Length: 89
Image (cartoon, rainbow, N blue to C red; front, side, top):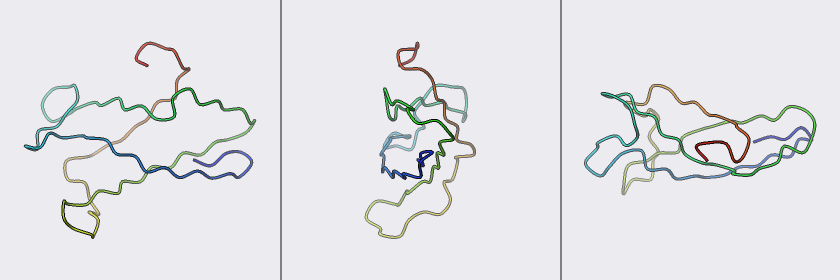
């Protein structure tokens, strides 16, 4: 995330999206699943101006050093920004 004053933050997050048997986690029908995964809860956007959020996956197969360039089965990613304390928090 880049703040309006140019401060840049980088985080590495780990979210489980599938069970050990390969079954996708989340809610939905068929192969389409939604997962609401929290990040930066109760963060204040206290500086005026644009904030920039960039997301990049860093997946690799167990026991391998080289990362995976394509996430097979993942076709879309979205995010929500909502006031803290809203339903679903």
